[in-house]
Image (tube, rainbow, N blue to C red; front, side, top):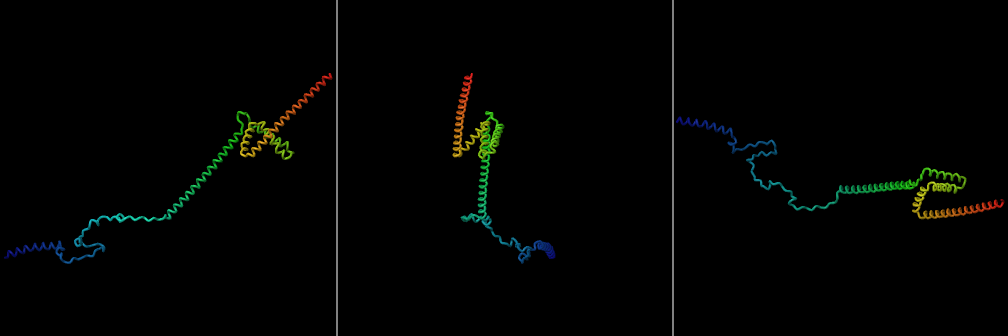
Length: 254
């Protein structure tokens, strides 16, 4: 009897020790059916419920997929036609202004080019005209002494007619100068005459008048030549007759 009591006591001591150790290690297991104290969370919006308390719900596979835009399923709506914006209108006006400025610049450039071409053509024509008046080398005519002779003849005509009327003072120097030119510079005067005639052909009335004057002058010159020849012949005849008469008188006196 005494041995059983001792054995029970020895068995209860380790059992009590194990029981106390289990309570110290897992106190919640002992209070599983008791009320659980809820502590106040630090963040209000944090869910403090344990995953064991929250019900587990199955998420469908379609909910996980990303949402597709609604325009793919819905029929496309026709875009409504709208008028040009103010920016487009300003761009159109700027384009028109640029084209107008471009056309003006092109026309101004064309006018300048035409003016320069006409100036160059005029200069070339003037140079060629002056060069065509000069005598050729084959003719042997020199301008320098001949021009001086023509000027001296014209000045002599003005000196001679200084006390005459205005008609003679204007025509005699010109006539003497032209005559000296035809005498001293015949090739140059021929070139000047041809050039004058070419310009006169642009005006038929002037050309016709010039032709008439030239023909009258030619007729006058030819008439003067004929009369001069007749006068010379008459004088020769008279001189011959006089000489023969004198010779006959001399013979009779002997």
